[in-house]
Image (cartoon, rainbow, N blue to C red; front, side):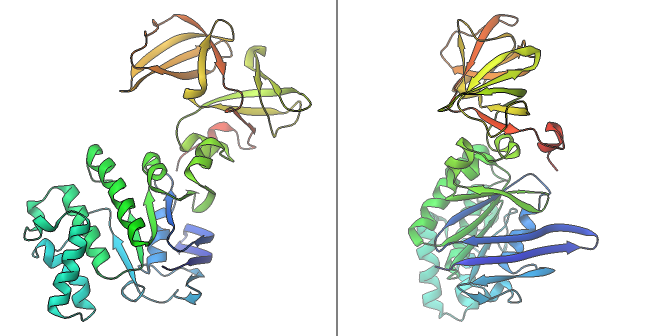
Length: 361
């Protein structure tokens, strides 16, 4: 399967720069997801990689060959769109046969190839149906089969699940990963859904304002984000302004939140005396008999757990989770919060300020 390399890719539309100076490598058989808020340039980038758009500057290489000016139909690429794009006048089998026939495959072979991929996505029993007769999930599975049946070595998925119901999205994302991993296909998948990116990717590319902001495995991006924006955008986190008071030899840092409230964490890149930002995910906040004093302001049932929102004496709002079968605290109840030291992250305070640092486009 192909190795994809992007060098200094920039795309401008008049005075607007949609993507800027993108350098990216996607390894053979790797499942890479481009994640980011609306308007960050992720769809523009995948269309450039696919050959739908030609970049203003930069080059695209597939297995070392410059394909920057090669159109989509000649790139060995399957493309699945956000809005399900099946031919409405063709049956599902007819849609799946389209790619092989375009490549001048004989009638019988085209049908057998189509059936092979329809079977792979569990749609062979609906091969004689027309798209309008199927659910959205089945239509998107048929679109995937059509993309794969064309013999593509690369698969581009442009928000393929966003138009589907939540349950269908969850089931189909696992199915897509299972299929492409079985086939060994190189995949570039665009989404704004953090959970979707976390569940299917070998690697996540986080974009912001037309640039690659951070990259890493889903586990690394969640547990050890390198930036406040990544911590905020991937998953959920509590962000609190603090001052680094002291660092101990061998590890351990004492922070001071607002109102002079002390907090201990394991490490910090910020220097003593600097204003910093403490990031703690809700699942790493616990109640205890002593700690950061807070009052419960809201309790929301999330299905498998309760999300408790508190207002701390540091004037921060701090959320924490408790199991669904736990006793729910009363609104206004006083609680004491402690943080998992090893799971807490401390970032240097961004020059532009916290609000601007986590602002979505």
